[in-house]
Length: 164
Image (cartoon, rainbow, N blue to C red; front, side, top):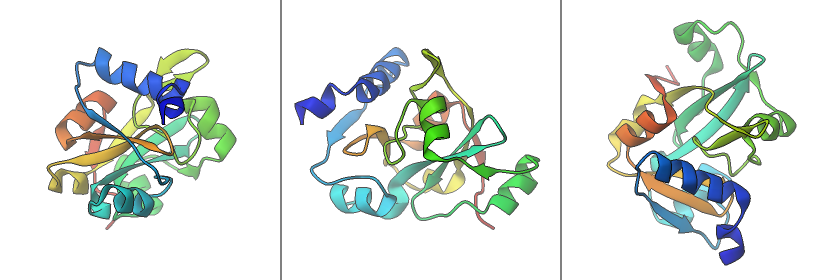
């Protein structure tokens, strides 16, 4: 697991969290946290406690941090955010803009052209239902524990509903 801890993406997320004065629990998982269901099973928590980072393009990235119990209703989100068309981002787009591979996309610590970058970000109101939530920390086997208000603050996210 120490190799995963030294992974550049994980270190970047840890550094970002420290620079924002957020002391969080970082957890290395034996099993993958590539999906919300996988992460919840590995952590022994409800799937709704998993903060999934979903990337869309318009053509720049839009990040929607959603509860693992929800799917993003793109038509609904387009309507409430007034974004004309949310296109699903492919793996190359995600890596280019965030510096992360799909399955390990963190809501913070993005790296674009060697600069830390935070895309326009929205957060699912459903995550506020939980005292603790877990988000990817830059690798499919690493997550961090936080709460809704801290995650909203450090990701500079605007609260929205993601489903009708």
